[in-house]
Length: 200
Image (cartoon, rainbow, N blue to C red; front, side, top):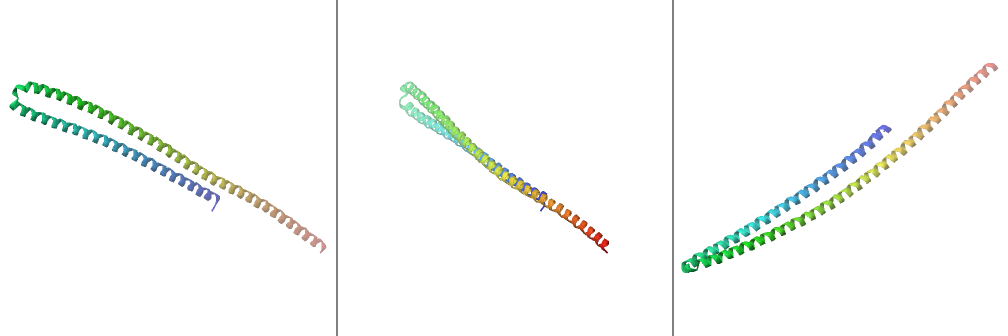
């Protein structure tokens, strides 16, 4: 494997790790958002159901009270016609008191519902902030870990490149020395050949 192929392989591996990390982070964000949305939907449905139940309960109590008053009016009108005005006034007062009572109960229930909603909203906000902090810390930790690994990889690559450069320089020096020795041997052979010719 050449240096270029080795560097490309290392670069591809690092990019794959970054892509995998980004995919994991994106998936965590999606799951967290889906969970928060589901919690809000459940909370809205619960509040709406509580309002419906309370409204149904109040309507039922009004129906029962009206039926009771109507029955009493019919029974009393048959035998106590002379007390009709007094009885009507009494019923009017009772209706007004009952209406006031139910209005007070409604106001109290609305206040409790508002307080409950505010409390749940505050808790959800705290949980969201806490989860966001934890997720951010996790992301930063993962990014730091990836950065450390990448730095270690690059440092090892630089060391290998320096070693290869040193090796190439050493080979180059040895090659130059060999060429010089070959030239000297050739010169000696030529000189020996010349001396042999002179001697002969």
